[in-house]
Length: 408
Ligand code: FAD
Ligand code: NAD
Image 1: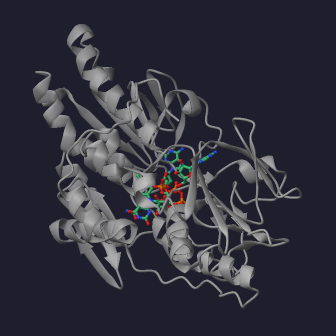
Image 2 (image 1 turned 180 degrees about the vertical axis):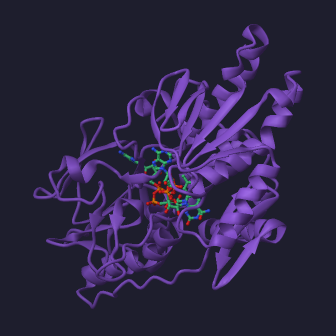
């Protein structure tokens, strides 16, 4: 009898952990597992802002997929997924190749939400992948070099759009790196501006007041110009237009939210901003052999509340998803997914952080330590203690070369 084919799209948080769990749970020859990802490395999405600023070596953020999976049990294919034919149970790759499946997991993650605001697609920088983040790094370096030639103050003005967790974390990294870059390039740091722009009344909208006050005061004390209650209306290569005026800058880093990968919209399915609503077993309703987890999906905690697009959610969904695929193959009962929120912590440079764990508000150096513990926990999940040790001593630059123009 032919073995059932399990195909996993995306080797981000959700895809890679599901793959590893399948490797552990499947009996020998019980199924054929294929993992497809755009690149042959897994990137730690939660630390991409460090790549953007250059505050972490590439080798700490990108990990070769073949070193993370069991190549005897999983076939890895480096390829870009173009479309899925759910009727034919077939995935089309950019190369023209088609891959058939019996069970499919879509874990292609997020895309940046631009809300159709003019200029954002073309001119703003995005923290959406290793390459797009590396492009930010190259651009910042270039601004310092060019400033020495033209003394254009717009080159030393760095604007971050959005003061959700991504925006705050990016601002924190800029605070850490820009004084060093100024020194290296013999530019007085007083000439450098870091501006954080947020449409809501305060930073970290939706978060507790303690966290908002702490973060606002900390960023201001670090010299960040905090502009709240002003929406970005558009940008060009040189100017950001706000409801409250204009800022001349050559660097706008856009972190104003995310939507799901466009693939489901392309397939004509009904989505919520690109995300597929899944059932309690993490399947796409009406397509019982197709699972979807992570930022590409919406899981409704109750009638009103959708889980947020976080690594924490994707990581909790992955083992349940793997178990349910196997249960489907074995015709046993599927398990309903239940989410347990463990807290949220945002870094503000390497030295400070803010967040909530359980009902406790945490801040400062202690929170920064908690953040490192969370990061180490993920590495443990991915590659056990050996990977933690390897990463601890890994200060190499990456084998992936990205130029300022590459951004996918
Ligand atoms: P991803 O991890 O984004 O993985 C998607 C994978 O699919 C990638 O490998 C990508 O290359 C691949 N892919 C995409 N398109 C294609 C294609 N067409 N063909 C083939 N492969 C493709 N969440 C937290 O809980 N805690 C945090 O501290 C945190 N920090 C964050 C910091 C930043 C800067 C950002 C941007 C996000 C952060 N998040 C955090 C959110 C978290 O990163 C996401 O929720 C998480 O990555 C979602 O996992 P995923 O598996 O759905 O997608
Ligand atoms: P977000 O949606 O949480 O925040 C986006 C922010 O941009 C909002 O505050 C919004 O008011 C603002 N905004 C939107 N349009 C704007 C405009 N035109 N002008 C100015 N401001 C505008 O998005 P995010 O920060 O990218 O986070 C995405 C997801 O990733 C969230 O679920 C978040 O919790 C998660 N995340 C978690 C961590 C962490 O746990 N440390 C870090 C980063 C991201």
